Image (cartoon, rainbow, N blue to C red; front, side, top):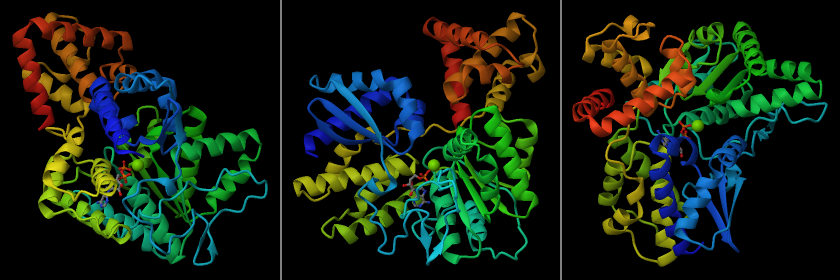
Length: 467
Ligand code: ADP
Ligand code: MG
């Protein structure tokens, strides 16, 4: 790809981020890469089918619009799903890469599938996501230790915590750890480890139902030692969730390990029933915090070392690493993106990496302050405190002005500071309808334009919540 295209892409990303906001951007677009531009068609790639169909159905026009604002010749956007193999250039695959869920040390780790449907093939693994390449810091120490313990446990060891439930925001290393368990566990050969994205579980199950081999699917699933399910928040649909719950219970009751990765704690899985939520929370729940500056520096350093194995002339002076570690957000994906750009620039132009180049290349990845994950409960608590009302008043049906306004403010903050949908927020506010929430959001949006005191209040509340 030529340099100008990469630069154009950087600007398009910046535009997109400005248009949709940081939250939506990091949920849906952070992992979108430019593959090629040909004859007015821009080909973009994302890692999963789910992301592809979501972006296509919700954001296709937007993305096209952003491109056209940069380059009028672009007439069409094509989104493809990239395989893990094609992902990024920065971390070379280890020489001993084991094929996707194929054979580890000569042992077959795929599940036998007489009917030939691929429901249980496991999701593709990225050979670079191992314990060796995972840097440990304060924010992920517990998660890493728990995952190692799971990967190394012997068949006869008592199960220590089941399920093991990891949760964290985007790009903080959940998938990295879950795949590390899969690699290490299967290499150790004690217990079969099956890694499935929730999406794969969902499609596998649905397609198995359609081909009437649900029983075979269940049996096969129950025949493995460690079941790893990533991105549980994407598991939709009542019947899939019921089946998931059965599987979870069957596994745990049989003393087999379940490991879950999710973007939120069990209690916040709105669409799951209470029994499943409490079962999910009954083992060990670990939150992975944001990557601190020191950890970011270590990750960058390790990445550069890995890249140098394939690109010996690539060098990033420590001050540049320190600059990126300090300014680029806590998200591991953006760190990877930043280094990829430096590498691309270095390869394409032959210029060595300088602070000035880094400042130019990573500009759009810099955010003044990474927004913290804010919980609806925290919003309610802080707003109630500020306006001196009780939480039960806030959730009640009472409509006196001294309660209505704080309630609207809290709903507005819930909409702007969290990724929760309007109906979810409505439920959290005493079972209100989503139109009520929408009304509140619009109301406050309208008022902050004219009411300086209110605008200031809201700023203070936001700051309090994000500290
Ligand atoms: P998540 O699944 O939580 O969204 P990922 O596991 O996909 O995040 O991590 C995003 C990127 O950051 C990956 O390239 C991953 O290798 C890297 N990363 C995150 N945490 C670490 C870490 N502690 N050490 C090394 N790389 C990390
Ligand atoms: Mg992930």
